[in-house]
Length: 241
Image (cartoon, rainbow, N blue to C red):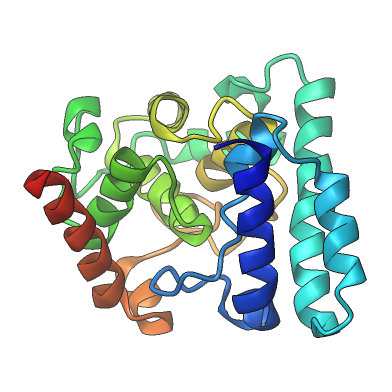
């Protein structure tokens, strides 16, 4: 841990990953992430220092550099502002009015699956993709950013109410994520569960006009089985120890 490890990860990211960041960052089966989030959270590396180092590396394609800096600076600052200006940032009531209304209108919709908090924490659902994401978080203290969105939306779909989904997602995130208890966490959960920083989409059961994600659509974009195999291998290594 610490600053030296953060700087090592930054240099590895520049040398091996960032060139394709704009195209491959959302594929959970590929390791294109910087892994710097926990170090930023604990103040062991400065976002300014990271931004300056990335900007100075002229061999990095402009599209890749811009994609990374947009997340590091713009999205991070939006999360900071959300927490600073909204006293209820860690509560369901912090959500946008349109999101609260659409979720309330579908709160009593029938759920095909219902799981209690313990089942979710133990990754005991019917969805192997979601289970892999939950296991990744518990076993490693991190979860791929794209999977965090899918993970949160399925909690909304499988719990008794949107408010309960928000509370469960935030509790699990803050308990297991190394970068939990952070403005980005609160913004991320609010985005996944209830459209914070997003817009209304096509209306459907349970979600209303909140953006929807499914196993089928996600699997068509990426090799979901490759991601599941990676997490299974991490779990097996942990058991062998």
